[in-house]
Amino acid sequence: MTAPRSAVGSQARAVAIICMLVSGISGAASVSEAFALSDRWSARPEAPPGGTPAADLIARLSEANARAMQPDRRARAALLVVLAISLFFTFVSAGRVLRPAGLPREGIRRLLCGGAMVSGLLRTVDGAADAAFALRFARLAAQLAPSGERLPADWLLGPTFTVGTSVVRTLLVAGTLAIIAQYFRSARVKAWAALQDEAPR
Image (cartoon, rainbow, N blue to C red; front, side, top):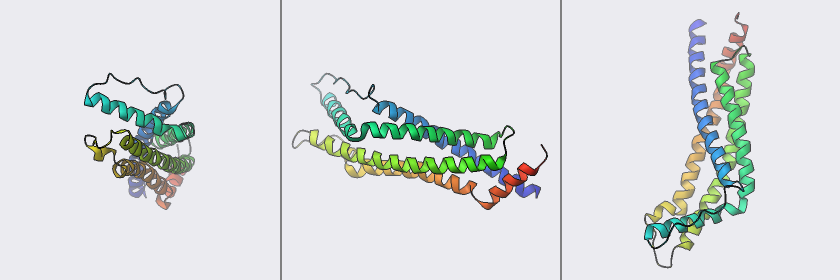
């Protein structure tokens, strides 16, 4: 039993490290986005001096971004705060897989499964909100362009690209968290946790 236990333990630690990276980076990004959407930080930035095509483009994109945020700004900021808390909980739970500090492995396993599942669900909901924002932004950016003028690399601001980018980001984070939760729910990880708890300390 020693070799299988060691193999599962090493694999569980590797998956926990991946979970810490995903939840840590996503949590920091959620906090940053929540601040950007908050009342204090969501004021429209001052427009840069005009007169050049680059300055005009920046001004139009800033205007489109500010207007696209408005419909669900406060609701999404609250969602991002809840998501950040859930991701922090998942991060700590994954850290305890590496250093249990006397806590039962089975309890840690259950907490990590629950945290990863809830975080994945919340990230999916936020991803839907982000896709809606990306679509609004793309449409507003197109409307703010002078009639008959094409923006540089306008495909980057098209609905297909902006919404597609949002969907890919959501799939990467939420999908990874779902896989991690499923892994720690597997029978072999349950058996490993039980054996670890039964071993003399």
